[in-house]
Length: 226
Image (tube, rainbow, N blue to C red):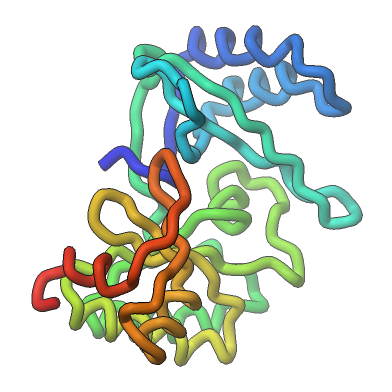
């Protein structure tokens, strides 16, 4: 499904057209040169939340540069024609990413992934670690989070997955989102806290084109066994 955090590869013409639209942007970063570099290496962009009034034949994309010496990361938003898309894939699977785990995370991360595998929980990654794997540039720093996506298929799976996240967050900087029906995403920590308190509590939901407050119970009602 086409959703936030999906990986999007553009054609050469698509990158060139995107670079041309960015040429007029006044900034310290040479945006066209960055996009041309992404094109040369055939690196993907990431699908971001759709801006208002974006034509149906365009996608809102983005990419992030490695952090500078102060830890500041430049994010570059841009748009591309849907016709210029070569392929779209889901974010990287945690299981496939393990071989690229930074040493500081490796042992605890393998333990977490093992528990997920035994529990039938599928996690995907995005953010700094994903960018580092995709581009082989240095994105992960000592204070970096591990950004995860978890799309439960049932209320019971949601509870199990949240329990694993809460358990392993004691040893790992686990962050990220729970993805409900139609790409409605909630920060897993907020979801966990609301589940412990009152399922009628409203949580901040990010969709493909907006941000809204919704009762957690309404999101859970979309899951099997709710």
